[in-house]
Amino acid sequence: MNKMTATHDVVRTGTLQGVAPETGTEYSVIVASPRREPDLWHEYLGGADESYNRHGCAAALDYDEVAGGTGTAMFFAVLDHDGKVVGGLRVQPRLAAAAQTHALVEWAGQPGQVQLVNAIEERLQGGIVEVKTAWVDERSPIAGTVAGQLSRLGLVIMELSGVDHMMATAADHVLRRWQSGGGRLDESVPFTPFPDERYRTRLMWWDRARLTEHTTAETWRRMRSEADALQSASLVQRPVVRLSMSTKSAGRR
Image (cartoon, rainbow, N blue to C red):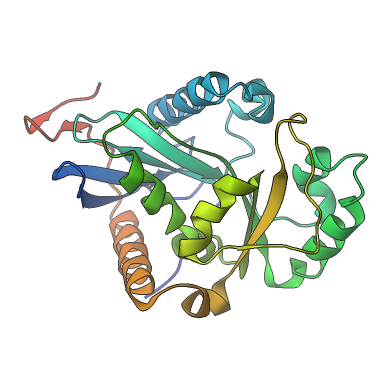
């Protein structure tokens, strides 16, 4: 199928439906740009702000810098059966140079900064996008499903962006949860204490050509199916309709 290249102006809205095994209820995954879906964007970002503050790491979000949406090519929001955003992530535009990554701020003054720049520059020719502001509401009954869903988005993100590589930085215990979706920690880059000394922030890479090697056959099948569904849905542009799946009554929240 034809793959789209995303920018913050042209990425189209797509929706994927799923069922959470914890509760047997439906949930949805929406990919959109901040410009096309501003209400959903602010709900996603508001949830991220609440989550980061709850865990005492609001400095890592940089809310005021992000809120305008200009530094985000697309974002993914996971909605529960009541239409509440319970997790998501955002994707920055394709990197043209290592100097554009926020990771340089995170590794500023740290021994691993040179290795970080080298790792990025080695991959620039194939294209890199950076994932930021990933969060899951751990209070949600479907938190496990949401985390698993986010971990499987690497394929569709790279295909929509037209790149071979995806990167993310986060506390190492968080990134390890994403390994099931094909991500691999970059052992050449030492951790950095960001946003403060409580955290060991690490760098993770996804390589589009090696996802089948780095995932189980079942996970790859789900990633391929979900990526196709999201991209097919986004080719038929429709506005986001917020449904309460438990009552099936339409209407925006």
